[in-house]
Image 1 (cartoon, rainbow, N blue to C red):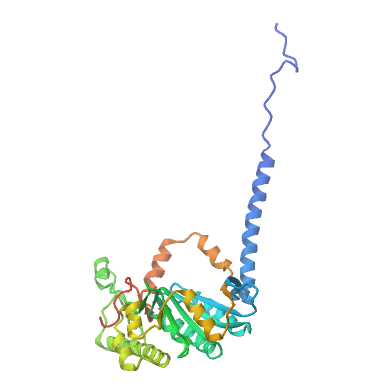
Image 2 (cartoon, rainbow, N blue to C red; image 1 turned 90 degrees about the vertical axis):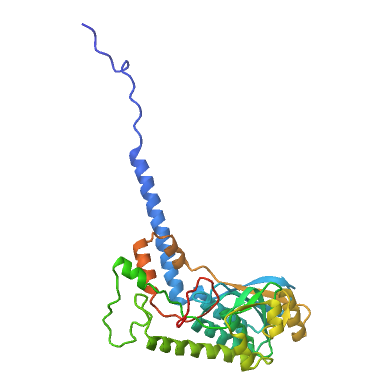
Length: 338
């Protein structure tokens, strides 16, 4: 008989993996990620409640950093709609309340936007320009609502356009998609239960009636008349007849705009700053601008998974929501009545 192997002669067993430690580390990591997400969410809600996130912060841009006299540059970029509207108005209020800010440059690079938002910014600028001089520096595009808000600088303000600026596009548009043929092909038709004949007006799944065309044309005519009025009120060299002649919806080059009286001078932002300094009788100023802290709640929502079916449904429903725009865009559908 062969002898049994002794304990010393048995092959050594491989060491067991520390599974408990590995799972514990993963659990801690998961808890850490959840904690960071929860804290970011609660902080965003805290900021939203107290509105701290809407307060612009001043930063140095150019000029004499030691000067007590400041010129603030307020930028309007992209489509004029939330959050651009609120951020711009907050910047205007900050410049108005800061006694060290002697004048403001409104830097515009926008195709325009929502009618109501454009007028809100215009109104805030009118209040600012009543107590401090405001000049405009137009960048690549200052069209439609971008031109509308520029009128907030008043009769004493001056508009500078870069040599390659496009501006003008004076007019109003209500986007509408005609989906009647698409609806018939896929077997969908409009059958709203409503209390009035205009309640589902602009429904993309049925054609407009003549009454609806007249209704919406009257609405956009009212917004158009307001556009004409703000130009006439704030451009001393333009009367109503001339403005209506220019208000074809087209954009104008810088040279064309200068010839038509829509702008005062062709020049870059530094030319506008120097002109404003001369008006103020200042030689050394500190040029500042305003930044806005990130909205953490919006950032979190962007990284969350999206249900594409819900997104398509939302887009479809929004197609029937009437919105009037002072907007220049080649992608915007035809206006009511076209």
